[in-house]
Image (cartoon, rainbow, N blue to C red; front, top):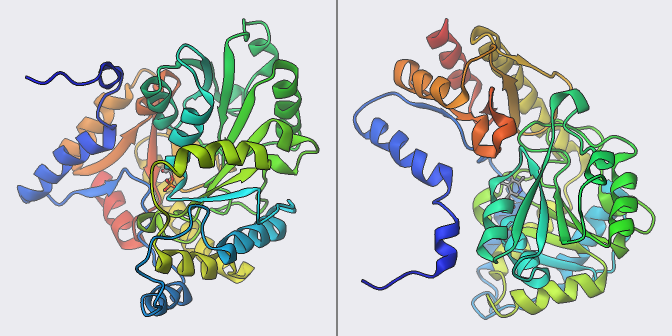
Length: 381
Ligand SMILES: Cc1ncc(COP(=O)(O)O)c(C=O)c1O
């Protein structure tokens, strides 16, 4: 038996990777499963994006290795996107690194900045990858608790009562997944000041800004943020391009270069046609967002009805691709979703996969058609 590396013992297979095997077995056995678990957009990307990819295939450059930093036009398009939607100025030459989805950025940033034993502040509840990557690189996750009473925002005052001397990096994610909480006017300013006081690098993971949200915000819009902050963004949800794997890291050139040093040793550039498609997507007008969100709005209304039928409560001001719903008192999330899966053949994500603060909550994805959601409501009623 060949022993695996110790780091592999620090993580488990991703929840969805395991659970979807179970769900697929049910489907294979003929059960009519409705999947409201994962946030993988079922809608199509803009048509011009598909055309740009298709035309890109015919270019003589299409099949060569591509630049480690992406096509200059892609970086220009990202700079334009940040200027238009977030009023943030970025140098296309030095402050942007295209990524194959923002998820890989979590690993690259951690590899670039973390030594074994460094502490990392991670939101609870939060995206599970922050924790697993932290463990894979031998660093120490330190969870900061978010709760509904504080609108799922970090309590920096109480964090400052703790020993932060080992903390090197802090993950924040606003608009927040899974709760859909929005950043307030001041939270990013407070975070930048906090990062400066404690010499911590803050990374805002920002893939949900454009879903059911009229006021996208970037942490980099705060004065002086580039000294201590990076931001990840993605085309996965904004343009229904999750399977394309396109995202970006933006921030000060020195930070971006450190991450490039890792990334350029791990892959050899993004496929040309995908970059050409991404450029077109980033140039979409506001019309794209309003059309997309009118679909999600209809779906969310139905998911709210589904949540009502399950006696759950939820915040109507929340944004993003999910509805985060509180279960009736004393109902445990995993038991509840297993029951609904068994009896109604509906798969919903238990809040606990996002951390202990997710106990008592479930998360519905909006990546299902209105017909499917109506069927789910009928099954519960
Ligand atoms: C909070 C958060 N960050 C990052 C990602 C990864 O997105 P991408 O497809 O850009 O890798 C997801 C995907 O679900 C997410 O929910």
